[in-house]
Image (cartoon, rainbow, N blue to C red; front, side):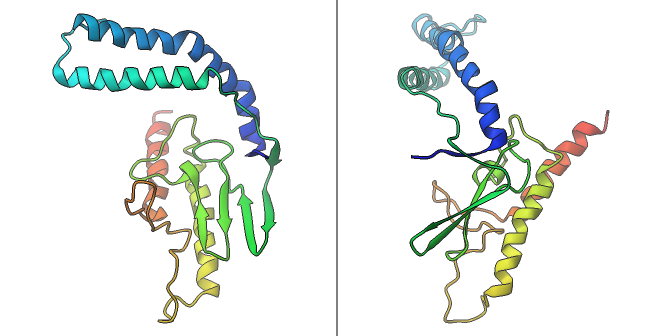
Length: 208
């Protein structure tokens, strides 16, 4: 089994993620779980606020998640990438071509997309998220350009596929990303997403 990562992602996993997880499992998460247990047993939060029925439901869910994570991750090793990608990698599996590309920084410094040209499908990970991008450790100044590079994949498909042909039932082109995600909700086009990081970056950079 190979774990494919961009070189930047592998470096961040080793330098940041593994030490952070070890610290969280040792101190941060047990402390957080204990705060929820105390609040549920005493009816008061650590700040003295009364736990309402709605808060109790939320705390019970959060405590369960912490307990599951602590139990599961304590025995689960983090494996840095065993096969690294700088710009791209193409795999051939039978009749299927799998193109792994690095289009630039966005959600992280090492976002990779997986493109199946024949099926006209692209998996973008957290580069495109509905309705609001997941943006921790992100690169808002670069993100719009990376999404424009993603849009070019759609443009290339338009050149080789006549979607007006009534005999063709096209799979949604990758750049538009219109389809259904894990929740069954229809994914929205990438076009509006390109403006979100640009607006956030402009707002943050303005006072500088």
